[in-house]
Image (cartoon, rainbow, N blue to C red; front, side, top):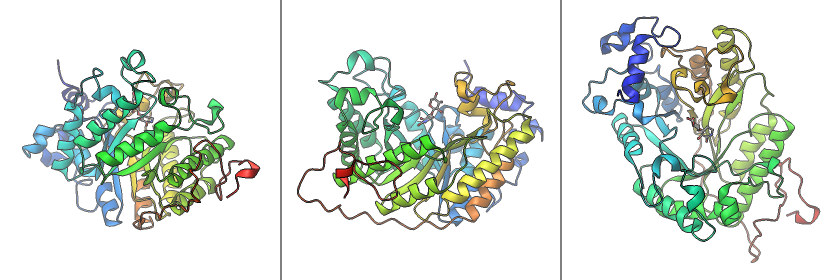
Length: 425
Ligand code: XIL
């Protein structure tokens, strides 16, 4: 059985999918034949971002990386070379999720996650941790095993073990992922997640406090999607995310950043003041804003590769030019580097399916690991970025002695979400 990485290498070299490797199959064969344009100093996105004081990086699957080859200084694997050259920061696309780490209730399997840490150390890359608490990617045993009695211990033990293992080596952890879902109908807009059912709204605070104890140096992040575009739904969700962040800050919960996933939809609503106000509101709370999972879904864009590329590059341009103008946005991660391995081309992800069955091109490198017009769009946006300022830790919120109620909505200046009349501050 070939490993996934061997398969990927063979697939790329064999030109799987769309006739991979037009330049030559050979550029993957020897380092000397690797195209030099993205390896030359100053031309990689990693390098561009570093010059601007930012981090640029990508989600990766450690199983596809030739870690041993890199360690021995002789990797000829195209994907490994690309990740090494282009990403100044990496995040595990799946390898640090519960499902990957927790084969049984009492055991952990760190094989893939450790591989990623090793790769990043060899490549001089920062690592984001993703994620410690989410309603998805829970192991099959979770449903039968987790109960109101043991859930708190389960969550805290998991966070202590995972964040503790990598203590001091993680730039930032997505501590809680996707906790807000206004469509679920609760006044606090919390999603009906298993964690909410088992522990109540306090689960969020429990997770952040456990993460802070386990890794005091990591920047602790709340991460969510559907908060990018100018639509009524996304306006409401942005407001509710801000309310959640505000509640956490008021309660003194250790929270340093909010992650905007950035799974963008070509042909969807544009980006504008709602997004920018959200980032500024986060800055007023002393929070950094990370772009954590950027990609563009072209399922609604008719035409061929050129039409897709134009739509994707244009969305990256408009999104990144707005977010990178804000000084509290120090990093951009994209969800994969090449469409060859993008989740949007995964047959199981139905929202990625294009009606004509053609492959998505959501990232700066295509199925052949060649740059798409999106590469240049990202490069230009990074060059024009406002250099990030280090956000000082926010002073504790004034507290009149009462324990602020986590369930009570209150107004946040600039928030589009309505607040009850007696909750004005
Ligand atoms: C996705 C992965 O890319 C897929 O491979 C996996 O099958 C499902 O999860 N928001 C997140 C990510 O926070 O963890 C998700 O990643 C994409 C949406």
